[in-house]
Image (cartoon, rainbow, N blue to C red; front, side):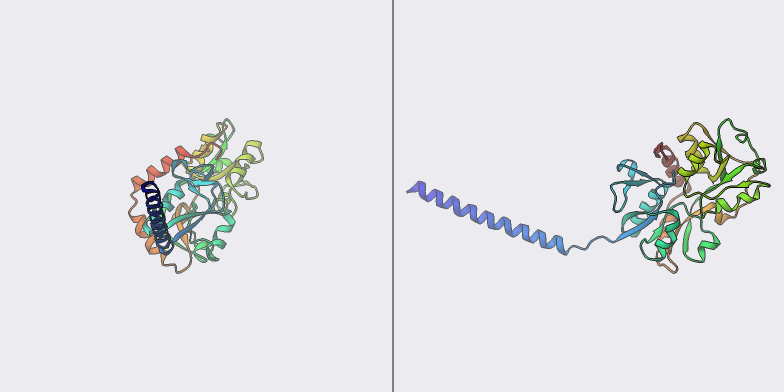
Length: 281
């Protein structure tokens, strides 16, 4: 009888514990369901413009997963975007977007900001607004190592050369400063231009200094040429800023975060990006 009674007591206790456990789970579930979700900060970039931004297959070196993809985005722009998102108290979401589609994606509301090595030119300011600058870079030419242009000190030494730059960038607009240059059609991105340079289709392409460093690091046949007598540019052309929608209240908030990033910190972030970029970029 005692044995039977003990079994009944044990069964009763088990039932109470089970019901109690169910009650806790339901409570936790309800609490979880009612908890506010963190707002997102959707940033558009190419993920193909190292060392500013690139694509990789894992989360190493602080890379962020690309929305709707198993890939990740890393680079200088991503690190700046992470700091801005933190300052806004929002979760960073990276939306991989072709360069030509960045402004339309912003104006249509698909993304909240462009953090993609974009210069705040007067033409772009007609359509979108920009934050304060978060980087400034000089223009260089990427050429074949050992070729006739590797020791050029002036852009005029590219007289008669086949030169190009990326489509819809101010890089392409300055090429005509070279007398009698053989201006080639603008190309979609830097990987395409590297292939064209390697094959001899072009003699050189215009880029910002970080891309030049990246190109010669990725391919020993390439050399970055820095000029004593270089291209004439405006501050807006060589600076890089965050693109936002016209009249956006994000502008002032983003500027507050950027003010907190010192020049030494920006240099350290860029140095790390150049070091960490995938060789394929």
